[in-house]
Length: 93
Length: 142
Image (cartoon, rainbow over all chains, first blue to last red; front, side):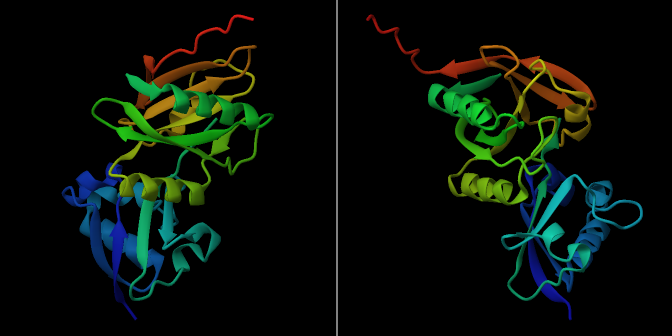
């Protein structure tokens, strides 16, 4: 069942959401959260999901304290009161 | 320009040395307008490699939250190059997520660590100066 979930946006994505630092979406999984964000804020499209719908490797997605890559990735469920955070993955050589 | 208080500069270099033989990394929080770092978060290198680094995602979230609680924000990242120059690699440029960030490279190739900082955007690398704030300790006469 879809619930209202608060999503914290990193500074780099805020301009695409009209400058907001948090937004609320209706979702039941992390995949839903990201697809909702992209449909509401099309500027985020290439930065959250790949063309095939998988999670973009340059973004970290967390439910509360946990990185969803260590949970069930896009299938990770979200429930009432969960806080989802997005951060750019930081990596290099 | 990147401005680093001397204690944070030393903490950064120490974290890189302790991380050997792997690359070490961490994130910097401060004022985006002036490039002044007020907090430094040494993080784990999730890649545990001498050639590449990934800031541990859990450490990154903790740093981001702490910075926000302190009324500041993440403005950059540092990492070490264990055997090469303090210049961004092709991998660094490909993965640079934010043109507003400061990308600090600490080279441990030579006897003395070399610290340089860059802005990276649209595949272009621009070096910026690094200013260490605070007093230089005086040599002690023995």
